[in-house]
Length: 297
Ligand code: MBD
Ligand code: FE
View (tube, rainbow, N blue to C red):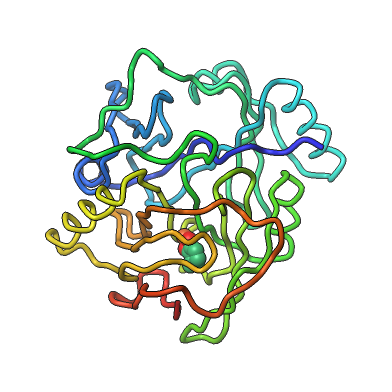
């Protein structure tokens, strides 16, 4: 059975491009790559042409997620799978593929309306190695783990689970968490060495994107980001702590778009069998409330 292999790229809409360039480079360490198109710029994490397309204009949310398959035969198999499941999709034109810097892709929507793209053949610029936006000890964990993970909105958790299961991801509910509105039971799903590439089941405040997580290879880069974000007094929703599921040491702070960035280090691979947790290993104490993640971890 065909299956996606990684969360390969993401598109974001942002209202303040200048704030995003500064935040991405100085707080996170991403490489800002602007080709002078005016309405967009790129963020790099490795030698891919880009991992993020930042569309400057209206809105502050996720524009699309790009899920990778190995090659053209796999994309064809994906088309057959989507057709067999009655899912509407369009095949991208040559111009659309050039715009995304991929050899081929399909465009569709998940059950909550999140724009999903399934692609093969990203542009990899081996002549143009990653050059971090600020001084860094080491780079980001990508390779066989994709760019990171995101927590997206879901209106029907079973439908969302079935949809991503169809794309080839595995997982389950991994927490029962206390919130001001009652217990929530979020899902976490994986398709490679990253313990989860997608999560859903946290009530949405109207945005498609609750948070995204990027992982450093060195704990020192996580520490440096934490120092910079603290020094800038950027709101921190959940303090440093270690997750029970992926074992990553992370903290969550606000991006210039309002949704949260989870920066982390030390994530593990998925386990073959499912389990769930009531609390994290340690930390993740709540701090700034009302920015999307008022959960008792
Ligand atoms: C995560 O990455 C996360 O965002 C939450 C809420 C719980 C466990 C792992
Ligand atoms: Fe997360």
